[in-house]
Structures are given as C-alpha cells and as structure tokens.
Length: 265
Image 1 (cartoon, rainbow, N blue to C red):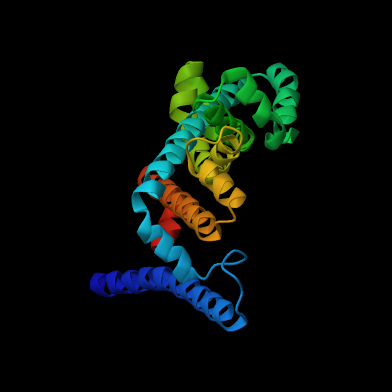
Image 2: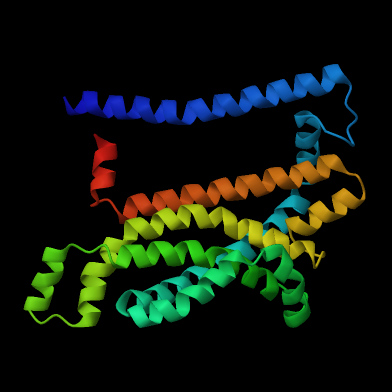
C-alpha cells in the first residue's frame, strides 16, 4: 500500500512538471512557426531559435550581468523583508504604532517605483546600493501586510494558556506569534521575490553599466532584439529559480502545517 501511494505521488509530480514544460514548448513552437511563415524581421520580433543562438553565443555576458541583478535583487529582498517584519512586529503589538506607521507604509506602496528610482540614483550614486533600495522598497509593503495579519492570527486558547503560565512578550512572540505567521510570510515571499528582481532591473535602467536592466536598455537603443529577448529570458529564469527556491524553503520549514499535510495526501 505505501509503495502504491509513493508511485501515485511520483506520477502526480511528473504530471506537475511535464504539463507546464509541454505548454512552454508548444508556445515556443507556435512562435517560431509564426515568425518564419510571416517573415517578421528579426529587429521586430526574433524567433526563439535566434534568441537561443544569442544566449549560446554570449553565455558569459548574460551570466555576468545576471549575477549582478540576482545579487541586487537578493540583497533588496532581504533588506525589505527584514524592515517589514520589524515594522510589523511593532504594529502587531501596538495599535497606536499601527495607526501612526501604517499610513507611511501605504504612502511608500502607492508611490511609483519608476518615479523614485532617478532620485535614489542622484542621492546614493551609481553603484549597487540604489538598486538594492529600490528592490527593498518594492518588497516592503506586501510582506508588511502579511506579517501583521500573521502575527495577529494566533490561536486565542494558546495565547491565553501562555499568558496563564506567565510567558513573557518575547516568549509569546517566538513560540506562538512567529510560527503562526510563517504561512502568511511565505505566501508574501512568493509574491515579492519576483518583484525584487523587477525592482533591481528598474534601478539598472537609470545607471546603465551593469546588470540585465542595462543590457536591455543598450539592446533597445541598438535595436538588437535577440539580445533584448535573451536578457528577458535570463530574467525569467532567475525569477522562476527564486520562486522555486522559496517554495522549497517553505516546504522544509512548514512541514508541520496542515496545508503541507494536505498536499501529501
């Protein structure tokens, strides 16, 4: 019986992987055929084969700039998450702090990143720091909202019990509030990891010397569409890899949660 269940899980995982791969291959095939039959110029829409050829022709170039963007996105994601969790901890324990700080956080959310990116470059220079800040800025609000909701979603019975045994605020936070918030936090992480990559790219548009954002700008100015699309493919691969890594970390961390138990059935 356990062997049959294992085979069933393996078949489901195979289908989960094969279905999206088949869909992507089908889209690429239609794209290739359409470009070839319509005679669309390469400077308008390159065929997937042209994009693949450019990637294979300059792998080091894309790997080098991709590593820069990845480092900036990862640093911005970590900074934004740390700041948002710290702010959410204060807000979850104080309604007055929430009423004071939440409007400021909302102001950060509604301010277009594309508008503040040039200011960050002026204030902080042309290095990696302004791109990290932009990635952190775009990460901050979604994690903040989820963290506040998670910290307040504790079981009332468990909370009353911990208070009855004279648990300190720190003990309640570490042993009850934080574990209760983890599903909310990982849901926010899955959303904000790709956003951090977008933030890093937006910052690179205004500095233009390193990173995939600068590759896209230069390729656009030169009407080099294969290079532009190749950079987009690398960005997509980075986003998918980071999302998969986040999902893996969630599975390893929340193995005890009922949502993970349901997925194993």
